[in-house]
Amino acid sequence: MMTASPSRNGGAGAPGLRRARSLAVVAGAAAALVVWLVTAKLAGIHLDVRTGPDQHRQSVGAAPVLLASLVAGLAAWGSLAALERWAPTKAHRTWPFLALVVLALSLAGPLTLGVTTGAKVVLLCLHLVTGLVLVPALWRTSARP
Image (spheres, rainbow, N blue to C red):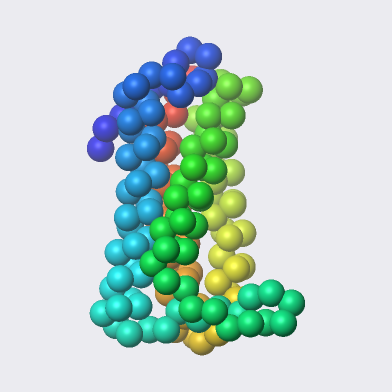
């Protein structure tokens, strides 16, 4: 895995840093897509969720999985860059804790929205796999005090 250090001002200006963080985001999305392919397509688990005020049943496909994991990765990257900018000496220690708290809170979604037990388990796995790829990969790129 490629590692890079952020620039002195905490920004993501170095090409190596941008590349490493971009790869982390893409790896998180790819991991989620692999979980979706194995569970939804190969194992045949229906990923149905209930959404909206009328509790409309909706199937979760590849596009929403990919989009959600990319958004999560970019949000994680952005939060790390913000911490490096505003608290450069604490970002390396603080960000993984914050990221894992957000990951833990995100698990409420699958537990409440999944229609079947199988869907809930797969949705939990999608969240966990994405987070457990993103957090260490992005953390390795953070500035050490």
